[in-house]
Length: 99
Image (cartoon, rainbow, N blue to C red; front, side, top):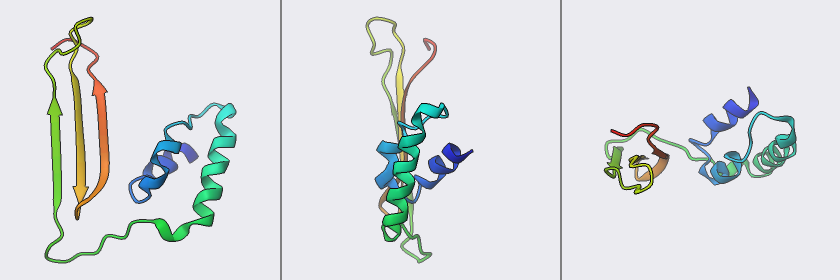
């Protein structure tokens, strides 16, 4: 449950995104999770604050290649979302099947 909360927190704390992807539920990653929590406790002012004003906008970008992998012919897709000019969500994934 703590790992899921950490993933949610990444939306307002992109500075922990890289470290958080290395934390998975097995107990061997518990030390990594503790390090991230200590960092967050020591730097609470680094979060992102969104305020509502007339120039507030959301931009989404998406892209896909078309079967660019010569080995398995699977495509890669990706997206990124900006809120008020700040990157808040992103993902890149190789498709499971050939389309």
